Length: 344
Image 1 (cartoon, rainbow, N blue to C red):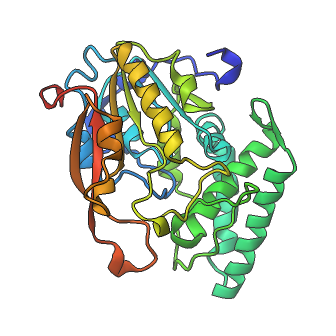
Image 2: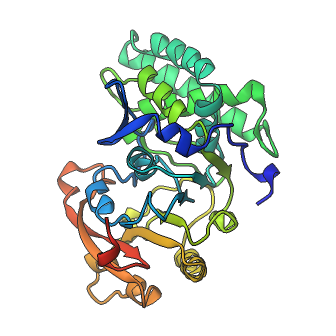
C-alpha cells in the first residue's frame, strides 16, 4: 500500500510503547503500578465486548512470540483490537475500516486528542443540564451539522480537512453517546439517521479513556480503505482478525447499515476468497460471524464457504433488538485457519 493511502504512523514502534507496560485485563499497566485502562471509545452494534472471552481463547498461541504483527481490517469499535494491544508485544499494527467518519475519529484521537477533548467538554457542558426536550433539540442540531459536513464534500483524498476533522470526530462521539442504542446507521445517501436517545447522564467527554487511547494508538497505522488493501501489510508473521458486517440471521434483523453500501452474500463470498489468499501467505486468520443455523439448521452457507478451515460455534447474546425480551442467547461462529492446538 502506498504511503498516501494510509495515515502516517508516529515515530515510536508498538514494541517500544508496549515495553513501558505490563499486561492487564482489557488495558495496560505502567511498571510503576499506575493502571492505564483502555476500552472502546464508542458503543458499536456488533461490538465484540460480550464475545471477547471466546475470541481471546482463540488467539494464536504464538501471538506476540513469532506472530508479531496484527491487522484488523473491519475495526469498528475495536474491542478485539484494544484487547490484543493490551496483552501482546507486537512490532506492527494495522487497522482499517471503510467508515470514513469512524476512521477520522481514530486518527483525531491519536494525533490531536487535546483539541478533541476541548470540543467534547463544551458539548457535554451544553447538553447535560438541559431538559429532555432541549436535549432532543440539541441532538438534532448536532446531527444536522454532522450530516452537513458529510454531504458538502469537506473531505479531501486523505480524510477531512484539518479545520473540520476534529469537529467531525467530536460530533461522531457526541452522536454515538446520545443517540438511540448507540447505533451507527446511515441511509442510502450516507446520512446519519438514528434518532435521539434518552440517557440520564451520558459520558460524552471521557477524558481519561480518550487520553489513554491516544497513547495506545500512537504508532498504529490507521487506514480508511477497503479490507483488501490490507494484503500488502500481511505476511507469515501476521495475525488477522476479520469482523465483517454479519450475515443477517433473519430478514428483519438486517436493519442497520454502517455505510451506504450493503454487505450481501456475494460480499461474504469475496471475503472468503480473500481469507484463503491470506492463508496462502501463512498468516494466522480468525473471523467471527453469525451462525445461519440459529434460524435454519439446514443453512450451511459458512460451513460450505470455509470448508477446510476450523469452525467453532460459541454462545452469544442477541444485542440488536429494541425489545429486551428478544435479546436471548444465540450462537456465533469463530472461523480460523489454525487448529485448537494453536489457540492461546
